[in-house]
Amino acid sequence: MKALRGVLDAMAREPSPERLLEFTLRTTLEQFGAHSLSVWCRDHSTEMIGLEYAFEGDTLVSKNDARFAGLSRWLPMEDLWPWPEVFLTGKASLIEDIRSVPPFPLRDRLLPMGIITVLLVPMTIAGRLEGAVGLRFREQRPFRPDELELAESLANHAMLAIQLSRFADASREAAVVAERNRLARDIHDTLAQGFTGIIVQLEAAEDARLRGLGPESDEHVRRAQALARESLQEARRSVRALRPQALDDSTLCEAVKSLVDRINDGTGTNAEFLLIGEPRPLRPEWEENLYRICQELLTNVVRHARARNVVARLIFEPNEVRLDVRDDGIGFERARRPEGHGLAGVQERVDEMGGQLAIRAGAGAGTTIMVHLPRAT
Image (cartoon, rainbow, N blue to C red):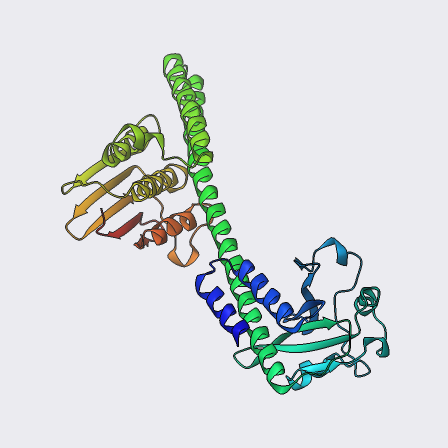
């Protein structure tokens, strides 16, 4: 039982599932004096049993190791092989002499190592057979019932370590997806928003030029150039995962007001900013999200709403913070939320802050979008 206690102690103190698996398999190997071992796991998409790990030469390697290159890593499960027994009965299966079983690539690989006997020990989770540990020996030997019981216990701890490793991989993958989505939102909120402002100014410049208004046309071009420079700076900062420059240089209220003021510069839409309540500092990530959300919503008004008026309100109440953006444009049908408006990114940002997003819209009735956040500092 010393081996089992050692594994339990390792589980309590070892934070890495991969190192825990290595410790458990090494302990199993040493406890039974085996030459090497293999770990076989069920593939739930095919229900086949495939090689997952091997412990050879005092090293734990995965199925992707070069030593298995070109070999089929699946166990043959036809009745003429003894391998399926452990997976059919859920009990340890002893193959006394592998030289007597039909050949297949992974068995043939063991013969030059001098392997004669293989003990297959089942691995289960919640009563379901998930795989087996194959202990390899260079000599034939019997196993007492208590030895088989210990082997099964160690194999189940190995299965637990494998599951923990899978969960860790899934968490890392989820983190990668979340970071990718964050970067996609930031790129959209910098480049796409900046391009929209540039296009609006250039269109206004062209319109002024056609009407013979040279000075006005030049002014719109200068504004477009300024927006291009700002967008380039923002893109560089987003790649470095920094806050928007507007929030480095001013408060959230001042930054939002600056966004609104830009709408009034030659877009044909009258924009107004209202601050209600006593502003207070928020978490930096909340300020960035609120700024990006307001930027997205105001850009939507310019690009899609055909609105004459838009009002952005930042409201500080004792128990919540709200951002409202309301316009008198063409609106849209809620049942057919338009694509390309960046609302999915807005929803993701609101979800990250634990808030709520509310949309009031109707065809021809304008749009009101409200973000409600619980109080936080």
